[in-house]
Length: 305
Image (tube, rainbow, N blue to C red; front, side, top):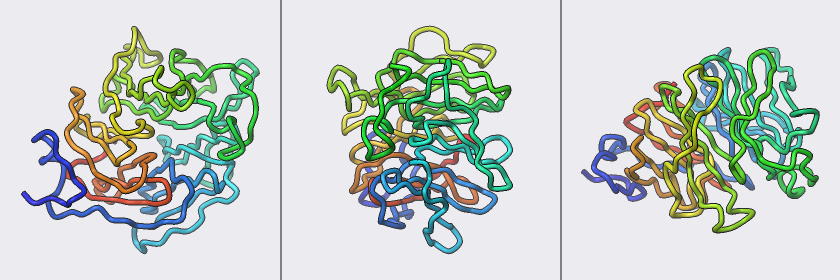
């Protein structure tokens, strides 16, 4: 099988996930740090962030054009959709989790924990029960580049669960800088990347860690296990496909891991990748946010949901 030159196979199982005549496409360039993609099926658009430029952008699949979705955008980072198809946003400058309702109004869902301001919510995912799980490292308050420099009021970087009734609870407190996160297809495992090497170097390995979800789905139990360690930069944002494979950002492109933790292959990208998202009518198009640009390729798998 002849594959695109940017596809690297390290396990034969990867051949079943890539398409031999599908190429990696460079769709757009012009960001300072492209991040936080979410696909909106109803409009066939990809919404993604350009954090330092304080704008949210929109790629239209039908026209191939990129334009501004929101500017200024509270230095928005991660996005996802809730169960009603509304956009949930992790905001650096807003230091909050917000929602864009169907009427276009931005509503703050949470901005404090125990009466202290959140750091700078980074990435976010919605569980099938409607709860919102998000990471809260300090990247948006470390300097003015991706937010507004400030001292952390909480004094730590946690992972939170926001229930539909507004209750906020810490679910992970043992990470240095929790970043990307995603559930396994059956939601029995929560995967979280720790990018704390940005602050303490080699003392924080660039891992994705796996946490077992409790039977009631409200908490995590036991100690985490190391799912994978990055060999090129750090793992930032990632997504899980319907088979349970993890497609994660890395310094040299996108790495794909099977649910057993084995590296299956890579999609080489000439820029540092920050995050990915499944889109397209069949949810089999992988969008790749990489430093200044937006890339994509079609795969022989789909988003988990």
